[in-house]
Amino acid sequence: MDGEIDPDEVADLLATDGEGLAVVDIRSKHAFDRGHIPDSVNIPFEQLPSRVEELADADRVVTVCPHGKASVQAARLVGSYEGTADATVESMAGGLEAWEGPVETSDPDGASAEADEGPDAPF
Image (cartoon, rainbow, N blue to C red; front, side, top):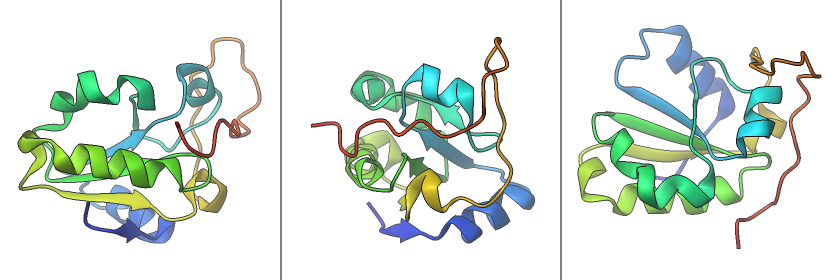
């Protein structure tokens, strides 16, 4: 893990090309569907060990959770994968609670885009 990244920096990265960037939301699919950072991918924390290879082509990985605590653990896990050895792997400081950028929903029922609290840590 290469540390934490400020939410404003994440917004700037997404606003520019975003080539090689993977923003990984580690919340449940239901929480992700209710509201997430645009262009982020959903890999729930419990699925991360079996799906981390999906991030092998990324040059930069930013993990995201509700408050920025569990995403630190997720970033450590992603950073330990040999397929991401050359990537910059960071956790978004403050989590979605600190995100002031746009939020996208994919909830077919049109539920509120409020962030789901979820657990502070997966353990």
